[in-house]
Amino acid sequence: MPDATRTILVVDDEAEQRKLLGGFVASLGYHAEAAGSAEECLEIVRDRPPDMVLMDVRLPGMSGIEAVARIRALQPQLPVFVITAYADHRQAVAAVKNGALDYLAKPIDLDELESAITDAMGRAENRQDRLGQAQVPEWFVCQSAPMRRVIETVAVIAPSDAPVLVLGESGTGKEMVAQLIHQWSARSNGPLVAANCAGLPESLVESELFGHAKGAFTGATQDRQGLFRAAHAGTLFLDEIGELPLHLQPKLLRALESGKILPVGSDVPVQVDARLVAATNRDLGRAVVEGRFRDDLYYRINVVELIVPPLVERMDDILPLAKRFATDFAGTTVRLSPQALQCLVAYPWPGNVRELRNAIQRSCLLCRGDVILPDHLPPKVAALATSATPVRAGRLSQVERSTILATLEECGGNRTQAAKKLGISRRALIYKLRAIDDERQASDLG
Image 1 (cartoon, rainbow, N blue to C red):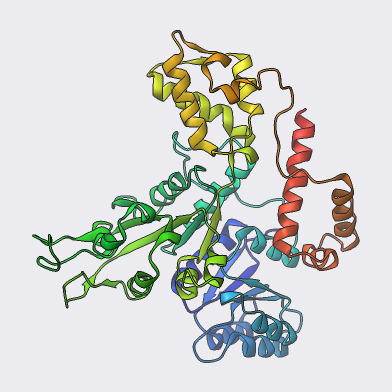
Image 2: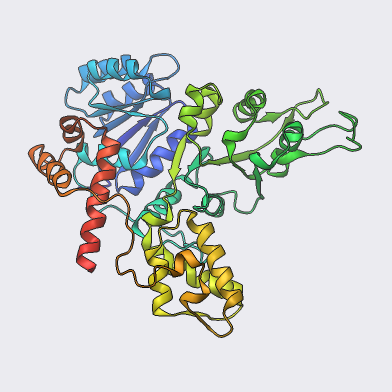
C-alpha cells in the first residue's frame, strides 16, 4: 500500500528523466529520492537504504549493470528495476542475471512502470490523484476511462521539460493533448508553436524549422527566425514527425541535444530553449528498422510516449464531444434527438474525433431548428438509427479472460510473473487487464 515514508530511488544521469520519474513516483504516494550516478546510488543504499530502486543502465562511470550487482551485495532483498535505452535486450538480460528484479525499456510506459512498482511495493488502492491541482480545461473532453488515463499521465509529465511523443490514429486529437501538456507546464506563459511536417515543402523544411539568414538562397530577402526560435521559452509541437526528411533528422537531433540551432546560410549558432512535443500516426519503430527514421532521433524524442486511443475505444466521449461541437457551430444550445444520439454511439468513427466534428458541423448546417435528427447526420451514420448495439472494440473472449484472471490469481497478483507464464509482455497484460476492467464497468452500468 502506498506510504509516503517509503522511498523509491530514481537513478539517471539526465535531470529531466529524474524529475519525470520522481514526479510519477510521488503521484503514486511514495517518497522519491534521486541520484545522478551509480556511485551516488551506492552511497545512498549504504547510508539510508530505499525500499526500491529504478536504475538506468547507461550511466557515466560505473554502469547500471555493475551497480545492480553491488546493490545486491549490500541489500540482497532490495527490489531493483533497470531501465534500458534502445530496448537493449542483452543489457536487460545481463542486469537481471546480476540481480535486477526485472527491466523496463525506454520509452517508459507509465502504466507498465506503475505495475512494476505496485508489484514490488504493494497494491495501489490509495494512489494519490495524479491530476493534483490541475484543472481540466472545458475544451478538453475526457469523460471516458481511457482519456482519463491519458490526462493523468499528462499531469505527471507536463511539469518536466522531457520530450514527448504522442501517438494515435489520424483525427484522435493529438494536437489537443499537446496543448494540454503546454498549458500544464511551467512554460504555459510562453508560446505554443505548431507545425505539420507533412505540410511543409521539403525544400523549405530546414528554413521553416531553423530559420535562415538574408541572402541564404534565392528569395531569402530578409532574416527568418524559424519555428524553434518562435517557440523559445515555450513548446514546439511537430505533428507528423515521421515525415521529416531523413537528411534533416541529424540537425533536429543536434538541436535537441545542444539547445542550439544553425540557421540556413549562417555560421553563428543560436541558443534556443523550446520543449519538443512530437506526434505521428505512423509506426516509427518500423520506420527505424526500414531506415526511414534515425534510431538516435527516435529515442531522443520518445522519452515519454503517450497513446491517444481511437474514438471507438472511448465511447463515453462521443456524446459530450458531439454536444460541444454542436454548441460551437450553432452558437447556441442545440439538442440531439434520442435517435440521433443512438446513431452517434452505434457508428464506429473510423475518422475519429475529426470525423465526428465534421458530421456535427454538417448537421448544424442542415438543422433548421434546435434539434438534430438522424436525417441531419451523414447517411452512413443515419443508417444506424435502428441499431441497438454500440460498436465496441477490443473485447476479449471468455476463454482468454478466464485464462488471464486464473493465471494472475495463481501468481498471487504478480503481473510480472503472470505475463511470463502467459508468454506475453507485461505491457500487453496491462492492456488486457484494462480491457477486462472496462468490460466489467460497462456490465455494471448496463
